[in-house]
Image 1: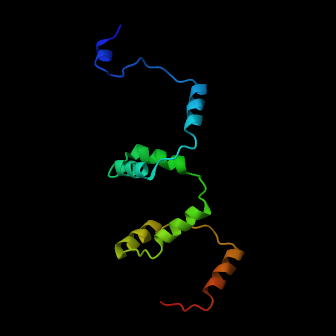
Image 2: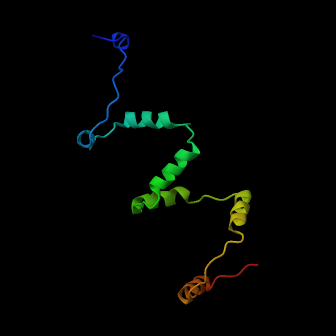
Image 3: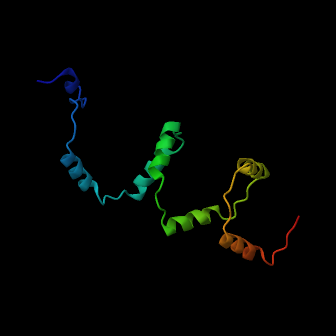
Length: 125
């Protein structure tokens, strides 16, 4: 017989777990599925304006740490930042963050490269 919840049309079922085999089958069923452009826009709009908790941000950082970017992605990121100028306030903050930073000893090869890079350039004090 039906419970009161079932009579009203609520989808209330006892909790259950999905087996590993079932998970694998569901995963395979969704593989290769592509969202339409309209649906992609809706997904984007749904996420706009939401703020992430600090815990969630940390989890995202951990998930992406160590991932290698493709050359195409690197190029896109480079182009997106080209021409960007830091404000004076921003430059001061960057400078303060670097103050007291200890750098290791520079190898002879690195010294030569630095020297070659600066040759022919005027030093403005």
